[in-house]
Image: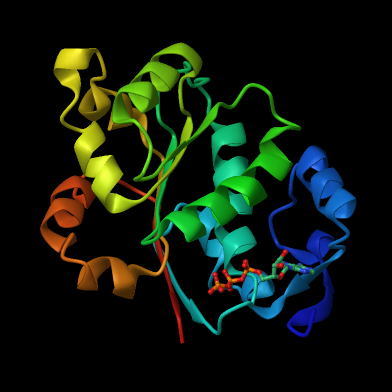
Length: 203
Ligand SMILES: Nc1ncnc2c1ncn2[C@@H]1O[C@H](COP(=O)(O)OP(=O)(O)OP(=O)(O)O)[C@@H](O)[C@H]1O
C-alpha cells in the first residue's frame, strides 16, 4: 500500500488497546499510513478534540476514524446500553457506508460488547427499526437520507433523538459531498451538542 509509512501503531502518543493492536495485526497492517500517523488525526481525536482530515483517496482515512471511535468507546466510564448510540458515522453513498461497516466489523468482532448497525437506503426502514430495537446500535454507519428517516420513527418505537444523547463521536465522512447533498441544515442542528466531531474529505 503506497501510503504506508515506517511508523508502527505503537508509536502513537496514546497507547492503543492491545485488542485493537491485535485486530490491526490480524488485518496485516503493522504500520500506519501518513494520515493515520499524523498528530492532527488519531492523537487529537483521543484528546477529545474536533478533527478535520483531508487526504487523497485511498490514504487510509477510514481507520483514522474507526480506531479512535473504538478507543473512545472503550474508555467510557459508563458502559453503553445496547440502544445508546456512542458513535455515528455519516457518509454520502450506500457503497461507502457498506465499506465502512465492513472495516468496522473487523474490529467490533473483537469487542462483542459493542453493537453495530448499518442504515442505508434501498432497504426496508421498518426492518431497520426492528433490528435496532432487537440488537441495538452503539455504532451507527448511515447515509444521510436513511438517518433522517430514522429520526422520524418514534411512533414505531425508535426514539433516535433520545438514543443519540450518549453520543461521543460524530464522523462526517466526505463532508464536502454530504454538504453538497443539502443535508447541511439537518447536520448542523444535530451537531450542536455533540463532541468529538470529525470530518474527512478527499483532497
Ligand atoms: N495502515 C495500513 N496498512 C496497510 N493498508 C492499509 C492501512 N490503512 C488502510 N489500508 C488499506 O488502504 C486502502 C484504502 O484505505 P481507505 O479506504 O481507508 O482510504 P480512504 O482514504 O478512506 O479512501 P477513500 O477516500 O477512497 O474512501 C484500504 O484497502 C485499506 O484496507
